Amino acid sequence: ISKIGVAGTDFREIRSYVSGDPVKTINWKATAHRANPASIWPLVNEYEREGRKSVLLFLDASDSVEIGSNIRNVLEYAIEAASNLLYYFIDRGYRVGVAINAEQNHYFYPESGRQQLTRIIPRMVHLKAGGEAVRMISSIENFRQYIINHKPLAVVVTTLDAKSEDTLAKFFDRLKSYYSRRRQPPMVLVNVIGRDLIPAPDDYESHLPVMMNLRSRPVLRKMRRTGVTIMEWNPGKQSFHSVLAGRMRR
Image 1 (cartoon, rainbow, N blue to C red):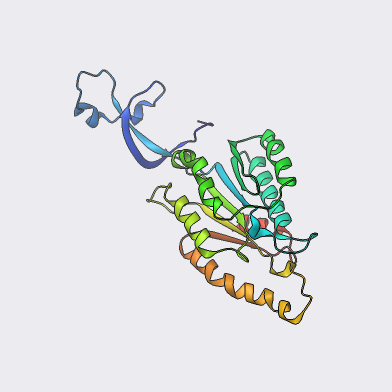
Image 2 (tube, helix red, strand yellow):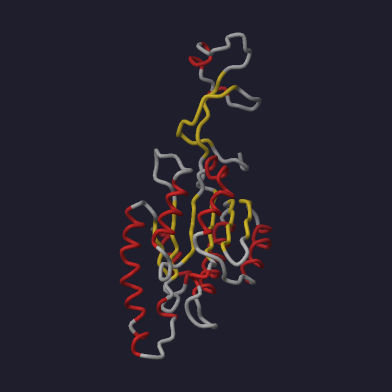
């Protein structure tokens, strides 16, 4: 049970009985009307597994997060946010898997325990931004079967300040296609605001943060309408701990 999750209430399929199935899951009516009455094995109801104790974390470290200076930039803060989320869920006993979209992609299958931290954190610390943001979409395929079976919470850490709206829309559409249509998929977008990290050496660039803010507002509204929970973090004005604590209280 700790490996595959507790059975929920959403019906999935009828299958043959296997050793260890609870007697209460036997479908006696389907067993009586099965195509092969000579079989000695009854049929049981299979239910979707609860994924509340599983998390998939998608970290975007593509070229689109290279916003800011060498000292303060979106990539560094995205890594900080992802590391804090990883520690938060591991500390509470969740199974956490990570997909890192960077110069070289990295994938970590969902596991629990502190060893998962020691596997992932060193890779995050030495990350270099690179590649296209659209590669995030293909990273979902590495966890396709896990998403179908376990319905985990999906958390995406990126920035909307320099990203195509189509990329995120396609990402969440692909992700939602692997969840049950009977309930709202548990999806969270952590938007690391990078516009205040941009140096403004002249009058034109001093208006750039305002323009980036206006550009990202419609995208955020669209994401919320599709059921995505938004966590916005402005590293120049608040700590990620305060953002996370406020969200978890709600």
